[in-house]
Amino acid sequence: MALYLVNPGVDLTLELYIDHGLEEAMSIQWERIQDKSIRQIFTRKLEKQLERLLAECMDWDLKEPTPAQISYATIIAQRLGVSIPSEASQYRFHMALFIEAHNEQYQASFANRNAQKAGEMLAAHTLVADRLKQSEQNP
Image (cartoon, rainbow, N blue to C red; front, top):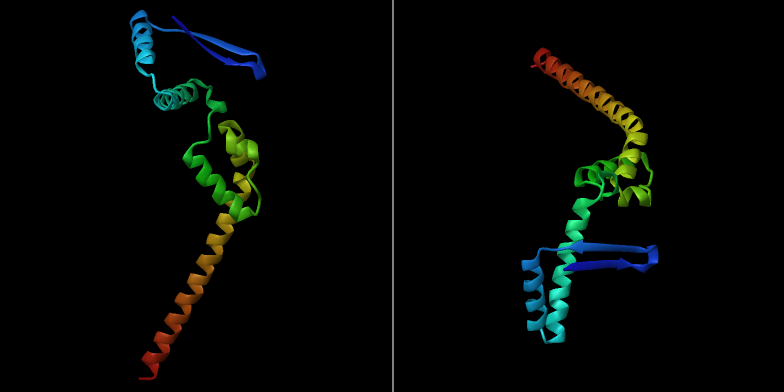
């Protein structure tokens, strides 16, 4: 038996062959489901499983961005005051391009911020050391 996936909008027809035993089981399953609402539940379940399988079969660059990419890009966008392009939110490749395009500037801003904090900490330590010396001299 062949199952067909058809998307007339892009002239796409996929003929998916399944094992004969599974074909028989599928036919029996469909015959068992007489109630329209139960058929809809079965169809939704099949849609979700098929969607997951199709996503796994896509080339790496067409998959959704990874959670790590999204997190890092969000931090970069917030720090630099830029927005993440819609293509980057959809596809891993475009997200990688966004990160690559802004990473150097982000790293530089991060380094500047750390240098500023280090300077502030040094000033605070110096102030505390001066106060300790003063308190030791004036008991």
